[in-house]
Image (cartoon, rainbow, N blue to C red; front, side, top):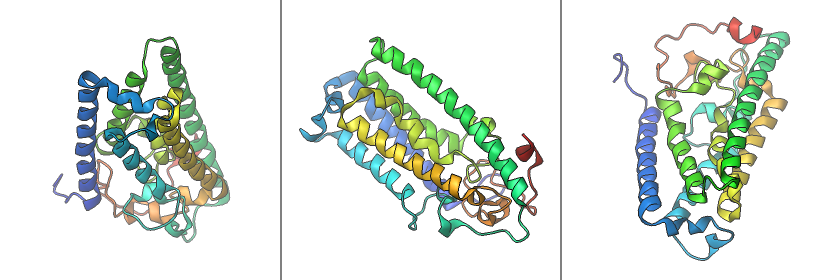
Length: 256
């Protein structure tokens, strides 16, 4: 319970996931310190030469991404599924095309800024790796940190919400960028393990961006009733949407 409101089942499940990810990070730290040879799975095609904890983690990550490529039913938050037609609920007397265009232009501009900032960080990390200041183990540990940080953003506080000026995860323009963020550092490592995960994350990102380009109305609260606060059943955000007034266009969102 928080502020007298019941925590949703989805949010509870995310807390369990958060604890699981902390355990994964703890195991990663243990292996990094005491069994660094286990990281050999990252080299070339060593993925196919044996079985280790890293194979289980690879499978978990792949199974986590696959549902975001296909529009079938699952228990993922609506914010991750709003690109699919089945999750689109048209708003009667919805915002006109000009308002939608302004929203998309503003959100795309912010997303481009986030992407540029992320690429800058990747460039710094890549330079450190190729200069020998970071090894494969260290880069992989960064991905494990991002694995935990992803749910910190969902459950506790999200800097991207500030940068994107999003109300919550459900309405966030880049909510489905999480796997791209998570696996982009390991693209420098090469090898089947790293490149397969990074490649799949790019496919998830591509499906999201193509859907937005073709059907922007699915991503805007003014045209998609399903992602409006008053229709929310996920209750995943930290504020729990305590009030659910009728939808009003966020003037700050569409004017910038």
